Image (cartoon, rainbow, N blue to C red; front, side, top):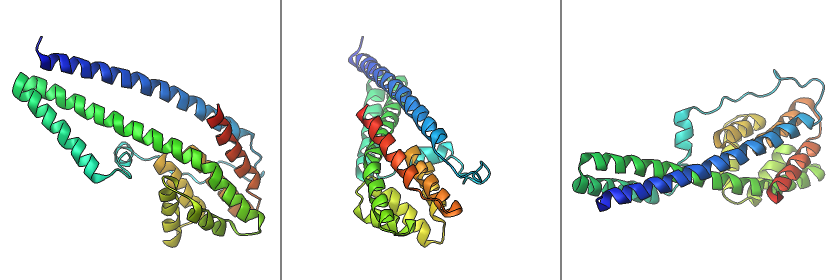
Length: 230
């Protein structure tokens, strides 16, 4: 058995372990989704609120979801990783033939995809950790009698990455003439952050039905904190 074959087998074993880890993470994500759905169903809503009145934002397609994995990625690091995959595949191809080279290239691409997915998972978790503080800033401004749009802009100034770039998207959409709730829903769908969509739901209810979003925002913040403690 050549050293190249041994190295490929070890790489496959590592990728199988990584795939198992992602399966476990996906199961925890599904449990988290059930908790979110339970929260949404238990929240009080105005009687006039129905499914047709809700803002519907289509989920991003496969290509858009793939491109979203590169959001915020340092181009130099991405280029270095791509070059390393090509160099390793070329070395395997020179030593073991075209077959080994193609297998090495495929394994390298899979490893890169898993690394991007893990990076996205970590970013989403950091955003969730920042959301309670962001909601507290909103509630503080709302308690002082400020409008929801002013409260959002103030909270953006106090926020840090990775939540700050998401909020900047919302602000840019507002400055382009879009609606606040619609912009927040689009940002939540683009970055696949359900908790941020619940914040958008509170804003939508407040804008369209004149109700106070404080109760919903407090419930979302408490839910995020409980989930992280668990």
